[in-house]
Image (cartoon, rainbow, N blue to C red):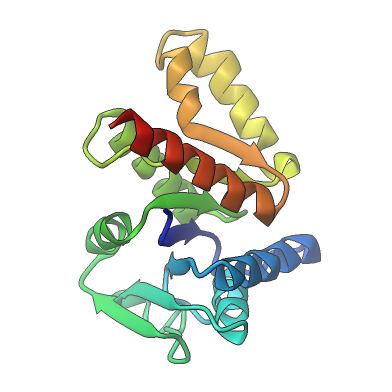
Length: 189
């Protein structure tokens, strides 16, 4: 049973209102299913929209923010718990430790950093094998094509390493997909 989902996304809203709507829908879906949100702790941008929607629908939200970002990302004081940590490494480690799976919404360099660190740690078995869901074929499609057509073809990663990644287009695919993957992992133990 999935209890906590770590969601990486931008502290900027971006130009597409569609992604903001998706963040809100995901927050609502998590709350309705009793899945705790673990996220970067900001009250602005997509992060804030996601957290607000989760809280608005009765969900639990744990935000983790480094002290140096507390002022620029504006730490969210209206969530279940906001943990202020020393640095980005501590933030990411705590997010890994508290989560059963990962979802990635559109974001910038920070989101990419979190995504690739999670993939690397899963691939090298430094953390338990989580499924990683990227929300939005239109946003992530080019990256996935590059990974397949360049990294795999060049032998930099194995084709089966792509099994970690799942690209979907709505929040229900994330929640149901994670449940199916977690169930398969539990049965394999």
